[in-house]
Length: 382
Image 1 (cartoon, one colour):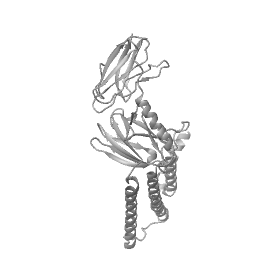
Image 2 (tube, rainbow, N blue to C red):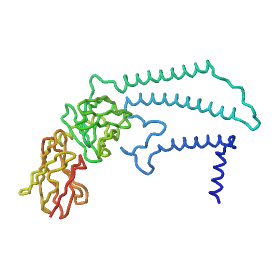
Image 3 (cartoon, rainbow, N blue to C red):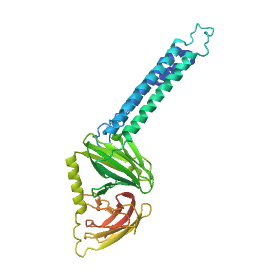
Image 4 (cartoon, rainbow, N blue to C red):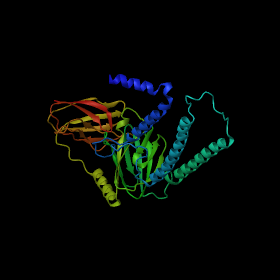
């Protein structure tokens, strides 16, 4: 049978009596494995390129979207070339020695044995030492003069606060603040070709601000402010995420960076201010009001079960008893088309917010905090 023959060929390949034919086959298998590993970073065919769906890197990192990332790319390229030269030299010598000095059938005695070589030992000590020292100096220069350098007067300053499990972006001196919702996350708008300072905060546990196209990652640590400067070169949308495991909904802690021209950025700021200043619509006359308190991320809502009249306008007053952490009120499948309904704005820690959900058809629903999807409750319309 074919499988039996294949098994016998494999056994012969690694049979100790066939050493001369084994090494070329092993080398071929290793080369094939390297090629397959390199091709593994080609991404997911059929899916459109978008934030969060970028192709994973192969031999080289994701192309940088920032000025600081270019220095990281250059340092990586130098390191990669040195690594390839070392690999080819070492593996080439190993293969040469294995083939050139392998034992043959006619060999009955050991060849002349050479024990040590001072020139070679000095050479393979000095060359790696010089190489490692040069890479250390290059990394130090890249770190101090590029990735960790600070501008005297950054054009934009954004305070980024990580909490379980979302982000809040506050633009210093711009009176603009926004938080995300669910897996979509908030969008941080930034102007291109201008220095932006990101100041990182955390209210509960350690989070990590990571945008793959920035080629940079920095932790947000409770009780400490970490900051870095970034200059984005190209207009576009770049997906980001928390890269430090921070709890149950860590995978939902996503965000986007929208890089735009200065004119578009100024228009975006004006639109955000108008949206924040917009006066909520009047509460329907005679609409019943439901009182809900968000206790904490782990304890959820009080009460956890609500009852409202079906097909009737109603109002939710949410009191946030969780200091320093924003919450909101959302209902799954509450829209006529089956989409979720989400209240706006967020109720900041220690504050409150009033929402006007749509009238609900009779049935059972789930209400939740879109910023912390694990906070849920049962809503009965009857």
